Image 1 (spheres, rainbow, N blue to C red):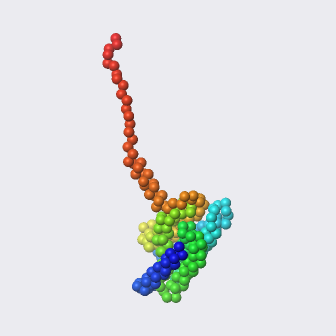
Image 2 (cartoon, helix red, strand yellow; image 1 turned 135 degrees about the vertical axis):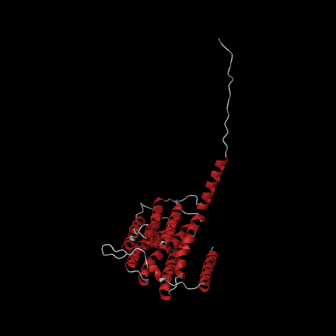
Image 3 (spheres, rainbow, N blue to C red; image 1 turned 90 degrees about the horizontal axis):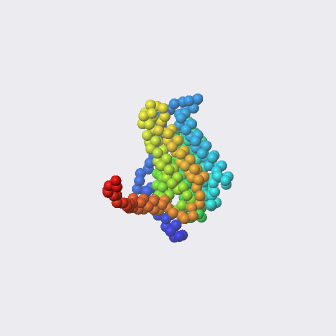
Length: 288
């Protein structure tokens, strides 16, 4: 197992180094800061893009309350508590960092938008390792993963290169749904991970369609504002999962569950019900 772990990390590092060598640097486009909705309300510039971050604070605080009151959710492992604590701190901090960025959008303020998001991303990866691979390895990985996320932000600011940040942001988007489907979980309600991944994907689509959405809604709301609301649904679904889930006695991956369900459905469709009919003889003799 130790050799496999070392091999996995070695392969990951080699792939990252090769990626950095063969791909060109990705500078931060200044067009990114040009959002569709620049309206000011109550003296707040870019008001809706600022205010729409408030749900992150709400769900971050709720998540921490749930974690530290055992009657709401039960965590089997100490490492899980640390991982989820980092996650909800990151989520709550997004409200402040993203709001600060949208007041005056530029590269310097964007750091404070991306930093808490990166902490949340990397914490989730550590949580998955704890739950589905190995508790000790996952717990140990919390600090290195969070540091890797922070370093990716620092690297971008010093060298104007988004490649490390892109890896930190998008690698979990691929790894987490795959692990959710393929690896057997400790707990029930694993499908909530897929709902969270779906809302994150929706948020990225809305972010890319910021100006078209603003136009389609007749300048009522922009894609970026809706992006914040869709992204806030990610921790909402994960919080619902924490509250609802129970320890799974027989650990079974979602893929195995789906296969069993498909097999039962096919067998059910192939069964042909047979009916037996009995006939009685009816006398036609005239009894008059």
